[in-house]
Length: 424
Ligand code: ATP
Ligand code: MG
Image (cartoon, rainbow, N blue to C red; front, side, top):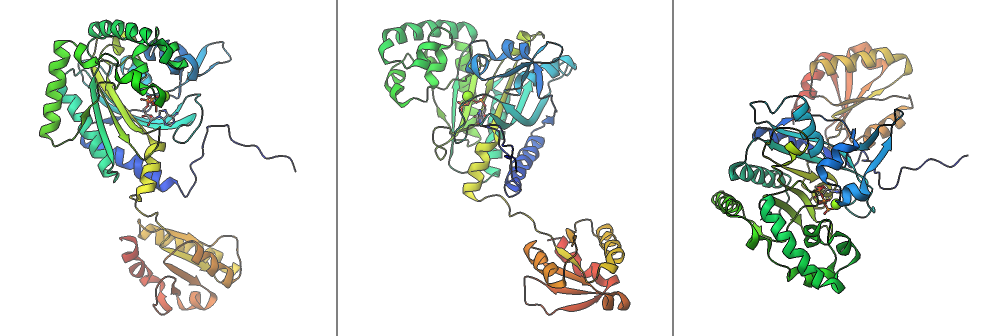
């Protein structure tokens, strides 16, 4: 026997036992996004490499070392999307969604980053993202943050904290950046390799270090919020007031930054302490310059992306997903001769009862082995169809979970027997 082929490192499968939790997470997002006025957009998984280089930033971790970039047969440089915002902006521009409109869009799907796989970090991972275009005020920032909080509550997740910050305008950020670089230059011996590399390319990102050895040097760094411009400060204050009025708890973390270049102004993260170092489950912020950077007219925008793997892990631990559904009934076929009758009966029942989950025994087998399969399927009832039953126009109904007596039911009355199960 030849060796079986394994998956690629960092590329997971979602197994049948896990998919109910995934569906719960995805459906919860979908329902709440709709309530806040967001419409779904479906985007390609592959885009031109240039799109990501231009939007995410040449000197970010993602573009420097994490992208899956390849040449297609025409020699074009293409990349598996590492995130969804760039493609969403590209589509909104290209398809004219920003003309005289302020679309609120969401998307979901796999993203790809060549990172070191570990708990909560994979190379193919999944996000749900939401983006709102054309709005520059703290009102939409508050709506997005409150919506994300509502989604996380609807998932039954309690121990999450919201951190917010404001990165200021481009000009104030540039001034702060200089302060920060000269501070870190003075502490060069305390910087780790990543920080030294970022010192001149992306120094704000040093504030986001996950290295415990850097805590002190980062704590004493100049304060970002002391350096932001007045407009940003006003925006940030209003946002905090609106969140307060909506009873949304938060902490201001002046060291909160984002790893992608396009962010400015409001940024926020939802963080769990139950996931170790990979604690951020949902992160977002404003990117008012990105649309112009990609070639459109200046359009303010704000968005977030949530990591589904991390949310699934939390939902599994919290046990808040609804139990997976089992078949309502399992049809046991008493004799191979009765195949036609059995399948026709099953189809009639499915026509009559749209909610019915009915599994028909396939692959033959003795009565005993079919009943064993019925039991293993988790079905509530076994329906037995033998020659005697067919002759009498009846079906034997066997309760697989409770104490009810086995009973013969007329085929015409079977719907009535099954109906209460399907509407539960
Ligand atoms: P981190 O600091 O954890 O690397 P990031 O800043 O790179 O995150 P974003 O690009 O903002 O993350 O993505 C938003 C969310 O997507 C993250 O908060 C996280 O939940 C999830 N995410 C990002 N990268 C991965 C990954 N490699 N595996 C699993 N989930 C991920
Ligand atoms: Mg990352």
